[in-house]
Amino acid sequence: MSGPAATVSWSLEATGNDVKLMVELKALGVLGIWLSKETAMVLPPKPKVSLDSRVVRQEVLLKDVETDGKVLEIDGLSMWNETQNPMQSRTVHVTVAWD
Image 1 (tube, helix red, strand yellow):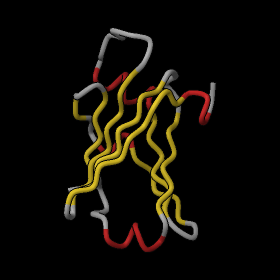
Image 2 (spheres, one colour):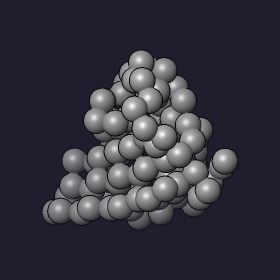
Image 3 (cartoon, one colour):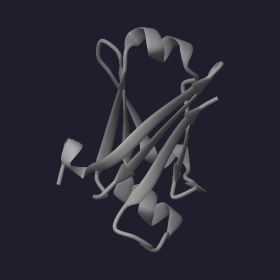
């Protein structure tokens, strides 16, 4: 699976200056999140990333790719290896929070 086929569901919450993206994935691969140039300028540069509610070290996970905006690439398999999280279901929940 890749891309949208691996995405079970997603939601976005925005309250004031806080933004939280929650994605449920069926496959552990690279999740790319594109942010427009304008959006990338107003959000903090390093969001908090968690896998099934366990915070993951950012320096292992995120890669910024400069384009017209910004793409955050989050490696789900590296995150899973980092947290040593046993798979409790057939999906994983990734949360990216800018606050």
